[in-house]
Structures are given as C-alpha cells and as structure tokens.
Image (cartoon, rainbow, N blue to C red):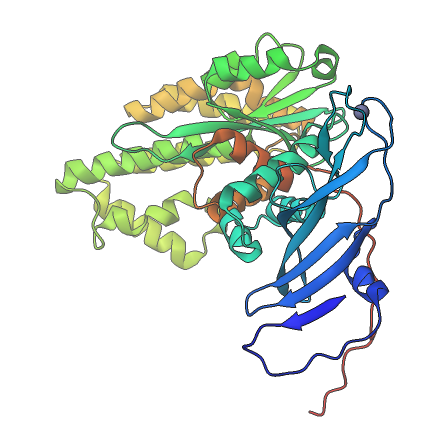
Length: 449
Ligand SMILES: [Zn+2]
C-alpha cells in the first residue's frame, strides 16, 4: 500500500501496516485499497476488486485476465474531504477462440456502469435532495460533479420510492388544491399544478400538471377504480374546474368546499367593493392616508378579533370613506359567511348560510349579489363540511414543504423533476432505514458560568 501526500504539505505520514485499516475505512466489500493520495481539494483512493478467477459468461470456460482500465467515480466524502475513487477495473478475455464473448470488464453492484457516482453516493445525494430538500446545485458542487449527475441520481434512487404502491395506501379524505408552478412571463400566463393530498395522513399523494377539469379527470382516469371507490370525502376550493374534473371518477364521494376558501370568497368580495368605492370617491387607488386603505386589514379580520380600539378605527374609516355604506354591506356579508363556521351543528349552519345567501342576493351592490350567487351554487359543498369535518386545513403544513422545495430549487422548469422532488419531500416516502449510532455523552456539557 502506498500512502502519499502532494508536495504542498510538509507533514510526514506515518505508515502502519494495514491494508485492513484502509479497507475498513473504505467500507466497500469486495474492494481492496491500493493507494491513497491526498491533495488540497480531495482524496484520491485507488482500488481494485479482490475477486479471483471467473468463467466466461457465454461458454463458461475459465477466463484469462487481459489488462486493467481505470474508471473514476465520486464516492461519499471521507472525514470531510471529497473522494475520487479510481477503480482499476479488470478486463477479462475468453480463451476459447470460437466464443463470441471475446473481452469484457468486471462489474460491481457498488458502481453502476457509466455512472459518475458510486451507488451509495447516489443514494445519499437522493436522500439529501429528497428528504432534506437540499438544492441539487449545492450538492453537486460539494461532491465535485455536475448538476445533471446529482439529478440523475435523485431520479434513479427516488423514482422507485415515489412509485412504490405502498406509499399511498387507501385514502378516505382527499384534498385537492392548486399551487402556482411557473410565474407568468410576457410569453405565457401563470402555470399551475394541482396537488392531491391525503388529508388524514397529511401527505401529498400526487401532483398533476395544470388545474383544469381535463387535468384532474386525466388523473382520476388513470387511478385504480377500487382505490377511488375507497375515497369518501373530497375537499377542494370553489373552482368549477375542480367540481367538473372530479366527475365522473369521484361522483360517489361527498364534496366539501374548503372553509378557508369559502371565507376567502367573502374577503375578496369585500376587497373588490372597497377598491371600487375608493376609486369612485377619491378618484385613485388606495394611498397610505386614505380612510378605506387604512382599515383594509381591519376589514378582513374577524369581528370577534377586534378590540375596542380596532372597532373604533373601523367605524371611523367607514364613516369617512364609505358614504353609501357599500363597504359596510360587504363587510356584513363577509361576516355572515364566517358565521356559518361558528355554528354549533349542521342544522344551525344551514339556517345561517341560507340567511347569508338571501341577504346577499337582495343587496343593492352588484359584488355582494354575485357573492350570494356563488354561495348558493356551492351550498351543498359548504354545508358538507359540518357533517364530515373535512377541510384542507391540514394541508397548510404541506404547502410550506412544497414551497421549501420550490425555493431551494430556485424555481423549476421541468415538471417531472418538480413532482419527484415534492413527493420525495412531502409524499410520505419510506426511506431505506438507517441505524443510528449510539449517542456519546448523554448529559449536556458542564458549564462554568
Ligand atoms: Zn467464452
């Protein structure tokens, strides 16, 4: 064994006997270490296999060693230093002149053919990018490979985990929610993806490109019929495209309008009226000192959350900025929507919702009438929340995970990569188990303070 350093350091290395020591550090069964060279930036470890004689894979005749070729791959870092593994790969030759096999090189399960990373380094890269949502570019720099090498490793090791039929399992409460995927540019409008969520186990089942009825129908069409039949409740926002897309695949399931989105419809109506009144009374968009602009946040918060001072400010703002009481009307409409969710039982909720719908539809303000129409059209779905208790609330945490993946990738262009990484991070993937080493020092270190 040769152990050497480049000329930049003066420290002499102490040689000990052991090939065994080097192999124990390497930890690749079937390989022996021939040389270790340390440079400023990496550790170069030259290895070869320990295997003896082999037979020809065609005719079975004992093969003859022809020569060796060097293959360089990246391995896991060693004591904080990146490692370049130089494998002196043996080339075999069949001695039988009639055999077609001629020559071939040995192979190992630790290093796949034509790969730049060892198998274990590829698995670790996949775990870092998938489980920990680390950026591919950073990992590539750390390992000393290109972006594509890492992404290929994520795809190679991650795809089987994501496609594992046991990952999803039976789902009773399904959540459907859209998120933006690509921001709008001068050439195209925003591109959305639709996330499908297991609301009870809080994991993302799948991502579908697009947010149209056809996109959703494509997904339900490809899903297993029996699995779909097990879904009892579907929670979604108030989008006609979702309502249409869930049919016919999920016609049997109870549809629930997600409370957060229902309340948001009321908030949006209020915002719309406030902006219009603002424009009509002052002739411009909201500015810092404008009475309605100053109370825009107070208007949107729930009445029960306002303290005395908040109430005073709200009333004052309305008195000054809302001469025809239009904003006040929209505020009352918004509160009547919120009240539906304060109801104690489904019957009470139905009464409150019907009251809100009737009041909105009889209003003089067009935006409020339109809110009434929306509420009426989603009446069944809104009230279904009170029977089933289902909402997309549990997915909020998942949306944070999705955003984390998106941010760490600095945006995505390739939907398949995006889907893979989101599902690896938030899809309830079972990672290959890794045993934890025993913990050293159970107590906190003593302090002298
Ligand atoms: Zn042969």
